[in-house]
Length: 311
Image (cartoon, rainbow, N blue to C red; front, side, top):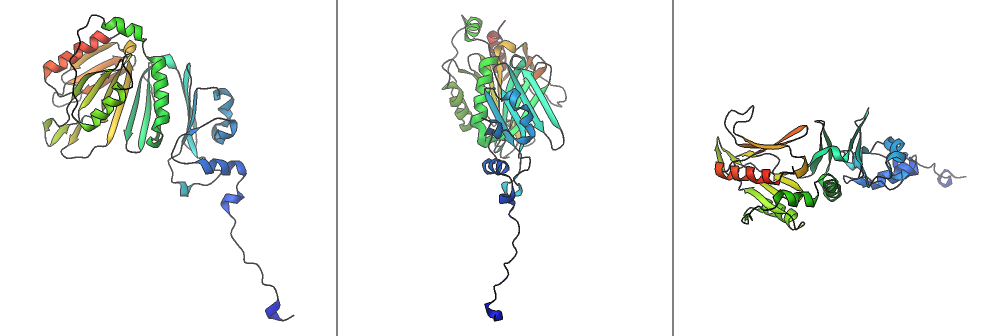
């Protein structure tokens, strides 16, 4: 046979990492992204945490939290999820994998003293303040903030005082004049809370931009009486450098029933200069809010919070 007619040897090709992976790993890889995943079956549970599925599968919310990684750097079969969040009416369970060790956090819902959400563009954190002084934190991407909002709403319903208890604590109090908000971030946050709940009303708003010296200014603060809990909203901190861009935010939810005391501290520990700070004490934690309004306005806020505390 002429050499020109002889069949050519097939060219070698590299193995395909995607199609060489087992089907279960490919399915997990196909659904991977920065968003929180919902676990509906044993197959949805990440292999690293599958041992806990039988215990946690009946939870009202069962979420898997993805690792922080660019999709192009991961492959089927890798540990693509770093944590599991299971929330029910009785307890909250968090399982975390740091690459070498699995850590478990568990708390009865009634021991949660406050819930906080921090966001700074995409990075976000859910924090649960427990009555033994611990704070359980879970990082996630804000693209899944709707999923976390559902969890927070559920926890608020199960940790807050009843509406009846709140009405007793405020009976006979004079109506407070309506507060008008004139700044975009706080206006949108007030709409979020006041329009969702007929019982919600604004307790206090502090306009950002108070000059503090040293090319620094305040970032403002908003406190909302949401019916059965106190909502504290600010920018994750209270002071910025002059003209510094700040995109962060923080929302804290504190049931009126867990507040043990509230006071106005003029010179907090570690501060060189006086900064009036509202200190709200719950079991195991002191929640501090820096305020820059005139003293008379702060004293009025202090008394208003005291009247809403559930005895």
